[in-house]
Length: 213
Ligand SMILES: CC(C)(COP(=O)(O)OP(=O)(O)OC[C@H]1O[C@@H](n2cnc3c(N)ncnc32)[C@H](O)[C@@H]1OP(=O)(O)O)[C@@H](O)C(=O)NCCC(=O)NCCS
Image 1 (cartoon, rainbow, N blue to C red):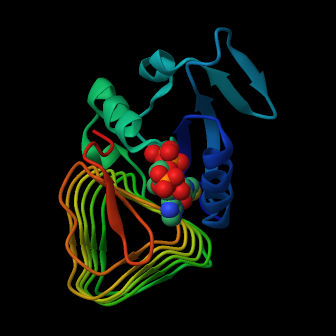
Image 2 (image 1 turned 180 degrees about the vertical axis):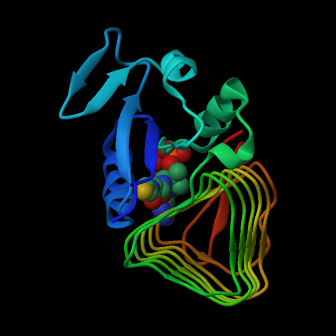
């Protein structure tokens, strides 16, 4: 067996546990978990834990990074704060996910167990494609978006930067969802959604002109 690729996780929470499983399923190894909830440094079971700023001291050339934080806006803030080259961020794809060879997945993006990413899909950087979600042909998902568990994006759906699609939502073909929207769990999205809004229900209706930005 060759040398295992080493990964630093930023964020140590429930969301990061699923990312850890996905990383291990790819036979990569986590060497550190950095989170600002840690005010002292520890080293246990060969994993270093400490605050995020220590990344500058432990990041070596052949080590990759994943931002394992569920909040889309916080993930973006951390990426801006670290200012690393985008190639330093690992793509994490659980080995049970089904990914079309014609799809394109960006840096720092995580694809959780059982997700399906079909033909000609384009997924940006630092997005979350969560457990058992289905991303049908020709969808375009921009940076920092989050498609929650069991969500179905049918063909040709566009999801703007930072948008959060709640668990179990369904989006019909050709719909455009703007940036930093918040789509409620279980919603059926049957018309385009403006940026910076929150919509819920079947069919999805506007409840807030605010969104997530
Ligand atoms: C949409 C959402 C963000 C709204 O949260 P909120 O701003 O706190 O909204 P509230 O709970 O105050 O609800 C506002 C109204 O919308 C309704 N509503 C909220 N979420 C709803 C949903 N998913 N479906 C249908 N109606 C919903 C509430 O019943 C309430 O209606 P009312 O004004 O008639 O009483 C949240 O309810 C939601 O669905 N989040 C998705 C979470 C998720 O899937 N996470 C995945 C993590 S991996």
